[in-house]
Amino acid sequence: MLNYLVSRIISALIVILGVTCLVFLLIHFVPGDPVEMMLGESARPADREALRQALGLDQPVLTQLTQYLSRLVQFDLGTSIHYRQPISEILAQRIPATAQLAVVSIVVALVIAFPLGAIAAVRKGTAWDHTAMGFSMLGVSIPNFWMGPLLIMIFSLWLGLLPVSGKDGFNSLILPAITLGTAMAAILARMIRSTLLEVLNEDYIRTARAKGLSEYQVIRRHGLRNALLPVITLVGLQLGTLLGGAVITETVFSWPGVGQLTIEAIQTRDYPLVQACVLLISLSYVVVNVITDIIYAAIDPRIRLGDEA
Image 1 (cartoon, rainbow, N blue to C red):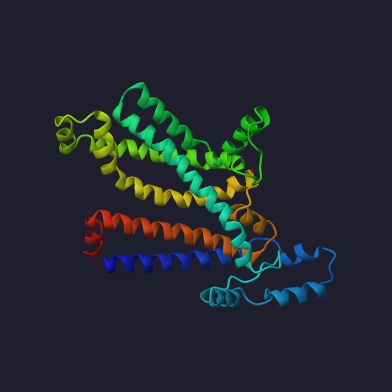
Image 2 (cartoon, helix red, strand yellow):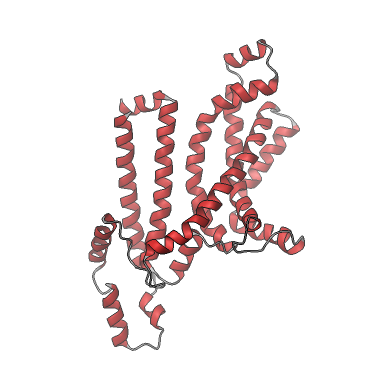
C-alpha cells in the first residue's frame, strides 16, 4: 500500500509541474500587454518600460518561469498585477464561494443520480428506464453556458422565484448548483444503472431474495453498496469537470468564486493571478483523484496489488 501511495503522489507532482509550466508559457504567448492595460494607450513609453521592469516582464520568459517556480516552492504565489494584492489573500476570499458551490452541486447530482440510476436498473426496458436514460442524455448534451441562462429566464425572469445572479443567501446558490449538478447527475445515473445491472445478476443477490428480503432491502443493502466502487471513482473524476464547468457557471451567474476570478484575470492579462487560479483548479483535481485512487485501493486490494506487480 505504501508503494502504491508513493507512486500516486509522485505522479500527481509531475502532473502539477507540467500543468504549471504549460499554463505559464501559454499565458505569456497570448496577445495583449498587461502594462498597456494598466496604464492605458496614452501612457509614455518611459512609464511603460519602468512598470515592465518593476513587474519583471522585461526578462526572458524562461527566466521568469524559473523565478516563478522558485517562489512557488516557497509557497509564494506572488502579487496580482491588476489588484495589487497578494494572490494568496485574493484566493482566500474566493475559494469559500467555489467550495460551497461545488459541495452543493455534488449533493444535487447525487440526489438526482441515485434514484434515476436505481429505477432505470430495476425497471430495465420499461418506460421508467427510457425516461431516466433520456434525462441523462439530455443532461450530458446541454452545456452549462446554455443551461444557466435558460434557468435564469424561467425561474428568475418569468416566475420571479430566484435571484438572477450574485451571492446573497441560499436562494442565489440554487440555480448555479442545479446547472452544475444536472450535468454530473446525468453521467452518474448512467454509471449507477450499468453497475447495478451487473450486481443484480450476482449469486448473492439471488440468495438475498431467497431469504425473503423485500426488493427494496435487496437493492439498498446489497445492490447499491456493491455497485458504489465505480461510482466513487467517477465522482472523483467528475469533480475536476465540475471545477472546470464552474468557470463558465460562475461567470453566467456572477458567482464570486475562483472561476469568475480566472475570467477576470484573463481579461486583464494578470499573468500571476491566472497562473495561480489554474494551478489551484488543477491541484484540486489532482488531489481529489489521488484521494479517490487511495480509497479505491483501500476498498479493493486487487487495485494496489496489480499496480505493484
